[in-house]
Image (cartoon, rainbow, N blue to C red; front, side, top):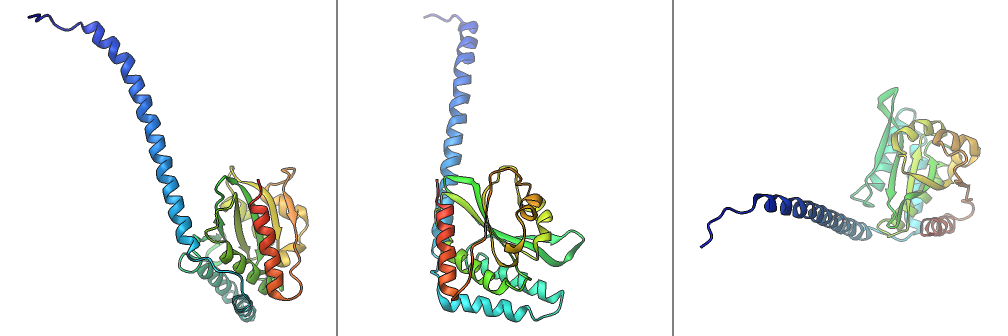
Length: 246
């Protein structure tokens, strides 16, 4: 029986070879498990949100339009607070399944919300963003807000290629704060769709605050004229085409 001690040098050399490969293997497996878990979470989120999806219909659109119209008759700051609260609750998890981000006024954090947005994150190109932008205080706000809310409800849970972000601002001047608050370096705005009074802004008034000069971003101003339902349907088709484009 050989009771000689093991070759220490051989053990050390084996460990030096095996351990790095083991570490690499464990690291690779951890990435697989992580992304598999993330994919399952995403699928559950899509499945839940898709259960809240609702097709465009005239009754809902007119309901949204009438609430914005009635609220617009209030005095400030109640008007701004009420409109922001209505948009937030309508888009929120219990109604449409979105997580709403709110931007407070830096000069008055306890005042009315400057901007709020929701995002339907793309499945293949999440950093490519179609930004749908309107204001909720302008004279065109009732129709534009109704069309955005109806479109967002119809698209919730949809597995689109690009991300689509619905954003409502008090007015275009809030864009400079919104850029700091909500725009990340990874975002690449392929299109900005302007609705309501925001559509009257020049390209420079939009691209400047968002830092989109010479980025190839396409600015669109779809018309929402005529009967409300056909106008919303045309907008929805356009948004789906933009967000589902490779």
